[in-house]
Length: 279
Image (cartoon, rainbow, N blue to C red; front, side, top):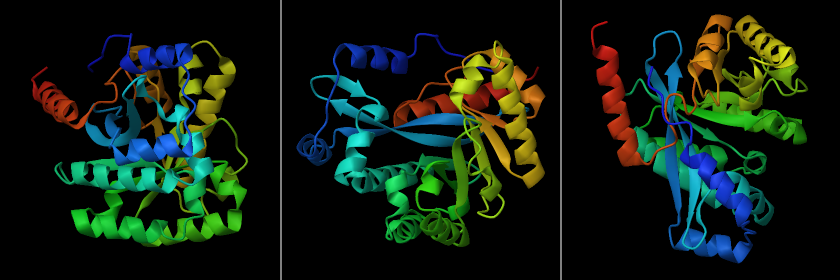
């Protein structure tokens, strides 16, 4: 399996953010949207037993002209508060679908859906329209929701999630293992994927509690016929350990950092060539 330098660009972004905090407002977000300062980066998701690429997650970045690249935690909360999260979600859908259309139909595309978007009655129609426009099978799209997002308004959430499932989209729970409040609803809401939180992955070798949480999540997923994917894998020990515990898929800096479209296509070609080499 390929790895990258441990000093990742995202780590540098976080350090820069700490030194120069950005406080976005409705006007600055509007300006950034109008000037196309937001860009989508892609991180590959890997089949842990085989090493094959199974899909990509789309991760939004703000290319701020003065403060450099900004991660979602610096602007998503403000966008949710101002209602601009819908515009950013549409941007992710259009950009990501246009990209994934170019790739093998066996590859999936994952994106995070804000709790605010669950309240958006246009979400299902927007996704359906974009699938038709870009010739994307909804089965290739994984919509990731946090556990808390499904609990804020469970009746409305169940209705929207049911519509998305009926349309053919795959549903995932993000940050699984950090809380089990919504876990009893997994089977009823027909989720197809659990994403193991990176905080558990980072401490799985040193914390028995983290390891137990990961094992419990994997066992629960297996009992419901749900796939598991771990995020934040940074070294071979974590990748091998998760594979031995039964986790099916993984993503993280060990495989590749989030990349722009050009770099993603180049990385994918090189990765596939490496896999095809005789052992």
